[in-house]
Length: 344
Image 1 (cartoon, rainbow, N blue to C red):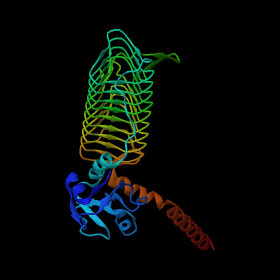
Image 2 (cartoon, helix red, strand yellow):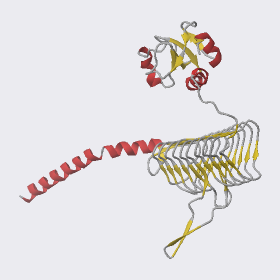
Image 3 (cartoon, one colour):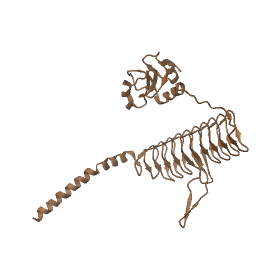
């Protein structure tokens, strides 16, 4: 597909600086781009690359006033570039609507319009799949589970019984939703399993990465509220509540009954203990260990997690420990010398 910069600017609501008649035939990252491609810069640290890229044009923020290449200035370069990917990138995947003959469909299953059910999908009794949803090969959906409209469920996802999935939800391969919460009672050294009879609710416009596990509640519900995005390899335990539009990054773990607010970011490899609350707009930095509740509008880091400014100071002091140790050692030696001199 070919588009001029003028056409592209109208699509992404951008302002052109340079030749509006440049023809764009492809889309690529700034380092890999070649002539004819359009690329983007969303982070100011990459601005020096504008002088080296072979791309014919660059999508930038409105703060960029000029560049060695033609640019399209936008409010959000990442979002604008995403629109361009949808427009220019080739899409050779064709989904055939309907039920593949190898799919196993239980009793009382309700399937909406324009649904695609690919090979070896299993739908247990009384499942409901609404309009325009795609279930890729090997998906398992348990009894009485409901999946909303316009969802995409990638291969080998398991959604167990009595789970509710909203509209426009994307779930990537290998994820398990509704597995039993990790509940055991230890009596005289023996671990006795506690039944987990609750459910999981995934609200609208949630995206869940690959190999994520979201456990069902012990009694009530584990809930992921609308607009939240979850990266790969995340563990969310029973009875957790995650607020709207939150971001949970790869390899994070959230223990049972934790309450996560709205617009929270939990960065990679972070851990949150159970039965605490994280307020709205909190940022938990990478590898932080959250051991107590956090008030809204706070950034924390470190282990145990503490306000980020304090954590940075502690980290800086820790880096100075070798020098401090050496200085103390020298002082000890000097004191010993003074003691020896006094004895003489």
